Length: 452
Image 1 (cartoon, rainbow, N blue to C red):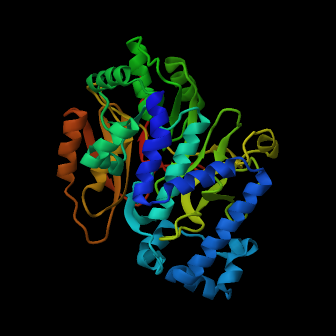
Image 2: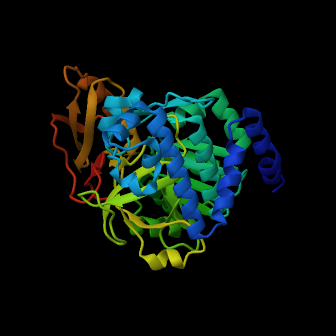
Image 3: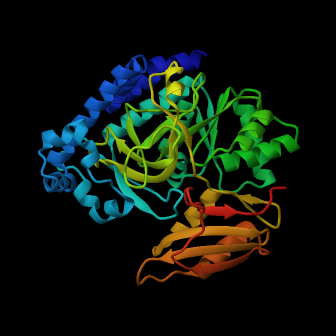
């Protein structure tokens, strides 16, 4: 309690004051927005959108060309009534025009290189600017506060994003973990010895919050249940990066005895929406990210109707991502879900389709989906891939290579044999057709083996 007070009132503000990164200002702004009415918040969002689009039309070559081609001025482009005229942005367009989407006027702002394979398996590189980084921190803080988790409360993440793990292992990351009391545990490989060590650590560390991939958390929960063990210090669990199905949610809650909340986000824009007590659905951080749910011809979907998700980061001026297609499907909640919420934010009823399955190996170990992302991205030339498991001892790795590139498939086989055991048979299939069901997002790792 004393440390939490010191951290939130002294350590954290002083650290970001010294950095001059704007995080303290962003926190005050977002905390203020949360107290607004839904209409007042909407006005804030419209103003931020207007500023962003006008800036992009004047200072970003790609958007300057787009707006000129539409026959609009920067001021006209910034009018929210013209927003839907701006063409959507796809990963391929970003790839082809990456440097043209970078602002010519950073004005004290800066860029950090970033990348993701998402759940498509295709490497996507982009830039996040310092300004949006501060707002991302403020959004994370606010979303945790919804759950009663305050700055300085101990937290454990069962995670596996490469950039996050690399940062956690660095000297700066180690120091950051000690100060913030946020511990990152790898979700790459989850054998019983590793899971026991994770549980023992949680018992000592006493986290109030556990954040994890649903697939990894189910594996951890099954282990804890088999050992008749639980983590009594937990106050909330957040699942992210994959689809959280009701059956898994109920099971995890039954094992750990706390509520599980779904969080929706992506590395390109950060946290987009999250469940919260007293809300029916996922609250969209609309003062950070504009969300559109569109049908096949680009029209807004009515509440309850599934459509594709497009997002606009309202704070990334360094590399604006405007009307950016994530590749997910979602549905807006019915109007009464928002009316009955004590929060001013719009509500998504569901996000339909994000998942990284866990491969089950002949020796009993379980290998999380992120392992495959890292393995199959470690060679240049792998454009896209999918791992399909139809039997316990058999995998199909379907892949598409970059033009005129060579891949060392034997190196992949050796790594898979080391991780999954020599009994695992692996077939590599070069193709441009991958397996997925209509109306759902592509699944990077598709496991059809019944869980035991």
